[in-house]
Structures are given as structure tokens and as C-alpha cells.
Amino acid sequence: MTTPHKQSVPSLRMRMGWLHAWIGFIAGLLLVCIFVTGTMSVFDTELTHWMQPETPYAQPGIPSAEALDKAAAAVTAQEGKKNRIFLSLPSDRDPLLHVTYMDHDVFKSETFHPQTGQNVPLRETVGGLFFFSFHYTLYMGRMFGVIFVQVLAVGMLATLGSGVIIHLKALLPNLVAFRPQSSSPRPWIDAHVIAAVLFLPFMFMIAYTGVLIHANRFFPNTAIERPNRGGPGRNGHHQMPSLPPLAPLLTDAAETFGADRLGFIQFSPKTVTVVRADNTKIGISRDHIDYDRVTGERIELVSKNSPAARTSQFLSGLHMARWAPVPMRWFYFISGCAGYVMFATGLVMFLIKRRRTATQKNSLPMEIAEGLALGTVLGMPLACAGVLWMNRLLPAGLPTRVTIEGSTLFVLWGALTVHALGRAFGRKVMKGWIEQSSLLSLLLCLLPVLDLATRWKWIAGQDQTVYAAVDLTAVVLGLIALRLSVVLKRKTGATASLSGPSFSKEIVS
Amino acid sequence: MTMLTASLLLNLVLWSLALGCHARLQSGWQRRRNWSPSRLVQQLMQAGRAILPVLGLILSTLLAGSAGVIGWVASASVGGVLVALTDAWRAPPKAKSRQPSRRLSAQEGAI
Image (cartoon, rainbow over all chains, first blue to last red; front, top):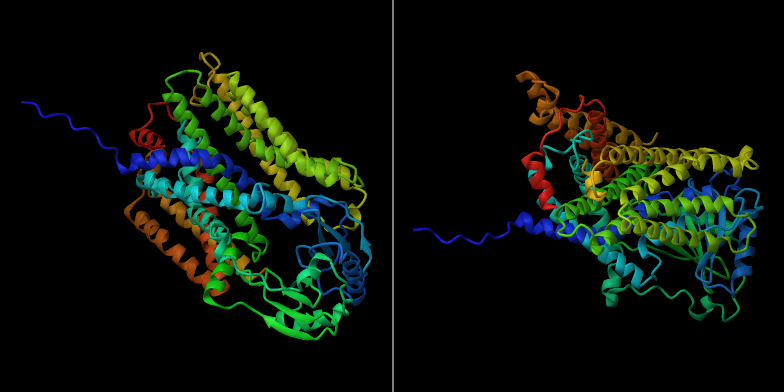
């Protein structure tokens, strides 16, 4: 007598595999872009510095009274017509004095030398803050965009959790095993596992803190009410009293916070507020001292020290890394690159697997997926490099240069995605990968040439550290892209005799 | 050089050594390199794999406090990448191509 064949129940690992693959692919297409721009945002101030090649050398420290008077005059001139104005104080990362204000949702600033007080004419640019804004809003608005990015971060947490279950058995033995010489897909899996497992603490931390930073967007009723800083005057509907001398205020604040720990100054009709710098401790505490706007007398020191506030400050600080000195920032940068590698290799493996098991050779969803994967994995870094190129190629005095720089990212990204889709529909997606990786390597490797060619006028009186770091990083990343294009070319050449130049056949060689 | 920078560099070295020991203790690694360590060497590597990171954690906490602990975690990841890339660079020539292993198929299948 035969027993009836039991219907096989999928194991937890198989179920998690499905979740990992599909959530990972759908969320991963955008998380790649979020990781690229987030990684760049680690050095947002330095990128802004690079994008303003006129920036002169200045010693960081408390600005002179003369410089503060000139900055105060600029603040007064802007008050009454602008919404938010603040005065960024010099720091190690940015030694200049900036009066920054919002002009039609775009940050603009006037810059002063912190010692001489001279106005420093810098070109307008989207700067590193552009990548930072894209990172957490995708430029879809500060409410919807932030919520959307948070949903993607929750997707990332689900992908990470399911990924740990899938790879649990091979987690420890394969911790540092990378075998690029093995036959595909082993190198892809190795790169994926190394990037994900070695950086797992970072990945969990960055996704978890990313969700919690704006948790009040999910639960709007829990949003903390902002303190009343003067009501309607902030919108410029009534006369602001004149500012007191700022130098004594900074001297007083320096006694409380420390001379090198002053962040920025905010202004309201009743108060002038000196805020502690974010680089003083891990948590972004935003401790501040309020001064009377008319007399300049200290009103109070405001510091949120409740356990909930301190936890929130710590998590925000951990995510944004504003506390981190330069070496630690590089570790954040490398970890961000690992996040990009993890998602990029994950997308590629997803496509290889689907292409292998596809019932039809040419299915439209498959071709769209291949095009979109290429358009994001290589298209987004290319578009970011394009912004840097556009920044230096546009005339410095062009009035619309901020708009053009910002639009470059989206236009280029769109064009590259169309190119990728075209290659996918033409069943030549591998050619698309080779073309885009070659273009990326070209743009990145030639960035130092562009930098020197467009900065030679000011190069004599400048600190070269930031420029050299950006240029060298671009070259290293460009060489990695070049290596990718060479390897892909070689693999494509080796399988040229195979019929049907699909993604999987080309890459599985 | 700040204490945090010093602890980062120190941890990078300690983690690289520990993860290097970990890689060499794997049977797959030993088979690929055709290397069989003596019992004493194996015991030393096992001890190194466990002790070096703990030593790094203690030192970084003493040197840089909570920031040092974050640096300790971060340097583990970067140290691991360094070990993986170094091993890949110094890998022996590719063996004759064969069918993917069962483990590979299972891993890939799950994805």
C-alpha cells in the first residue's frame, strides 16, 4: 500500500527568500539612490566647498566684531522680507561666516571672511545640501517625500531581517570570503554577503535611526510643538527691532558651550539665539541660549535633558554623523558605499535568477526590470557626477545656475533610465551596463582635470585638502567603474557565441 | 591625532588580524590554499579571533568612550573588507570550472 504524497510546505527560509527578493527589489531600486546621495551627504559641507572653487583660506574660530557687525547688517537687510534667516558660525569644516536665508524654498547665503569681515563673493550652487535633501525627501515634498523614504527604510529593515535568515548557515564561514575568480553568480553572492553581513550593524542602525528621526511624520499628533519665536514677525509682517552687537553674545555663549562649539545664531523679533554646534557630542541636542533682542541680555539656557529627548537626540546624531571627526566620516562613507554595493548586487542577482527561470524569453516586465535596475544602479551615480560637472561648466555669474544644477540630476537620471530601457528592450542590456559604467569612469576619472582647469585662478591662496580628497575619491571610484566595464566587456566577449544575448546568459558566463 | 582616530586605527589592525585568523580557520579556505595548520597554530588563531576584538573594545572604550564603541563596530566592517580583498588579491589561480556547489545553489535559490 502506498501512502499519499504529502504536499510540501515551504520552509521559513523559502518564505523569507520570497520576501527578501521582492521587497528587496522593489524598495532596492530607490534605496540605491538613497544610499548614493546619503553617502555623498556624509561630506555635504566639503562638497559645497568643492562646488564653490572661489572659497578662500580662513582660520576657524570666533569671528571678529567687525565681521559680526557686517553679518548683522546683512541679516537686518534680509529680515522683513525673508522667512528664515540664520547666521552659520565658522567651524573646522567650514571656516567662513554665512548669512543663510530661504528664498522661494531655496537656501541662499551671503558669505563673510571671519577675520576681516569682507564679503566673499561665492558662486550660487545647490551644494552638498542638494544631495542631502534628495536623500531624505527624494524631492517629493517634506511631508510625502519623508514618509515615502521612511516606508522604504522599513522595507530595508524587512529585507535585512529576511536576509539574515536566508544566509544564517553561511553567515560565519563566509564572513570574509570573496571569490571573484569563481564562476557566476558566486562573486555576486560573495560581494552581496560581505557588504551586508560585515556592515550589518551599520545597515540596521542607519535604517532604524532613519525611520525614527522623522517618526512624528508617521504619527503627526506626537509632533513636538516648536517654541514660539515671535509669531507673525517671522513672516516679516511688522518691523523688527535692530540687532544688539553680536560679539558680546558670542563671548558669553562661548563661556557656556566652549569657543569652538558654537553652531549658528537664529533671530526672532524678541530674541537672538545662539545654538550649540552639532559636532560637540554624538546626540544632536540643539542646546541654545536665548538673548534679549533689544538689550542683548541673556534670558535662559535651553537644554532638553529628558530620557526621551536624549534618546531621540542620540539616534539622530548617530544617523547624521555630525559629531564625527574626519576619520569617522570616512568610515561612514565606506559603510554607505557598502550599502550601495549590497543593493546593487542584490538587484543583479534578482534579475539573474528571474531570467533563468523565466518561462518566456522576452517578457516585458523582465525587460522593464532590467532597464530600471541599470537606470538606478549606474544612472544615479552618473547623474550625481553630472551635477558636479555642471557646477564647474556653467558660468559662475549665471542667474539660473542653481536651477540648472538641480535639474541636471533629474534630466540626466531620466535620460540614462531611458537609455537603459532602450537597451533592455533591444535585448542588449549588457551593452547598456558597459556603456554606462564606461561613461561613469570617464566622468569620475576626469573630475580632477576639470577641477584644476576651472580653479587655477584661485588655487594659490587655498587649502587644497578638500579639493584633493574629492578628486582622489572620484578617481578611485572611477577606476572601480572602469574595472567593472572591463570585466563586463570580457564576459560579454566570452559569451558572444551564445545565442540570445540576455542579461543572465551574458553575466552567468 | 585625537583619541578616537587612534582607537579607529588600532581597531582596524586588531579586527583585520582577528578576521584574518577567522578566514584561515575555515576548512574551505584551507582546502583552496592547500594549507593545513598545526594544532598549536590553530589554537593560537582561535584565541586571536576571540581575544583581539575584545581587547580592541576595551581599549577604544577607555580611549574614546561611547564614540570609541561606535568606531569599534565600524572598524570591524572595514577590517573585514580589507581581509576579504587581500585574500581575493592573493588567491591562487582559478581551478577548473565545475558545477556550482549545493550550498551555492541553495543560497541562490533562496534569493
